[in-house]
Amino acid sequence: MMDKEKEKIEILVSKKACLHGVELGKKIYLGKVKKSNGFYRGSANELQADIYGFAAKAVICEFFESPLPSFEPSNVKKYDLLSGDKKIVVKKVGFSRFTKQPKVTINKRQYSFKKDYVDAFLFCTFTGGLQQVSAGVGDYQIFIPLPIFSKLWLLGWLKSDEVEKIGRTHIWKDNNGKASGESWDFKQLQLRPMETLLTEAQMKKLRGKNI
Image (cartoon, rainbow, N blue to C red; front, side, top):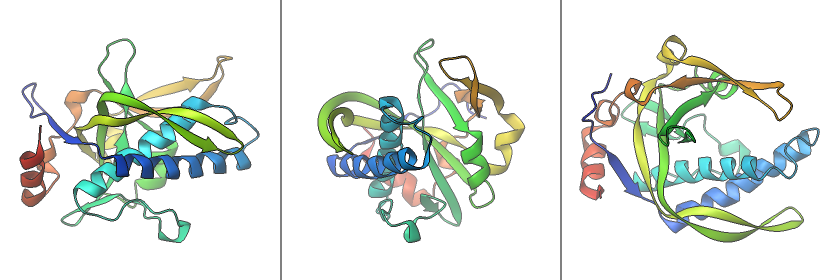
């Protein structure tokens, strides 16, 4: 869908959006701890994933002057951003420890929950420096590396109805080798370019602030 000379689009991360992600991430994480059998308890990776995911959503919402993700369950939407009449979910991804490239993936359970309500999934990842920030999580005070000095790289997007058609199934395993979940995995070149998702005005804003 995309050629190798695709335009690289990054936007600066604000401290306000990052800290919003921290507070939302903590809230979601602590909710998991209460509801679970203890699987999440003490899991720094799970907490960081929640924080980074909400920070990415907040960065994009702030940039496009949309309301930041809500703390109130009654106000939570099934999508993060509107582009024309398209409802978009922002999905932050990480990097492969083997290829050092973005690992484009989406949890199958999350996808099943969203797919009938949204039109597109926008994939992004943080690049740049981190800052250690102290945060209270439950009864503990911990340090979390936050992407305050980073940029958010908008990798591309997929239509909701094509995820299952082109995705490759990946089975996640816990430390004991037991299957713990499944995701859809994609190659970065399978993603559609940003200019085919966002409005002309949104792309103009992106290119005007692109570093």
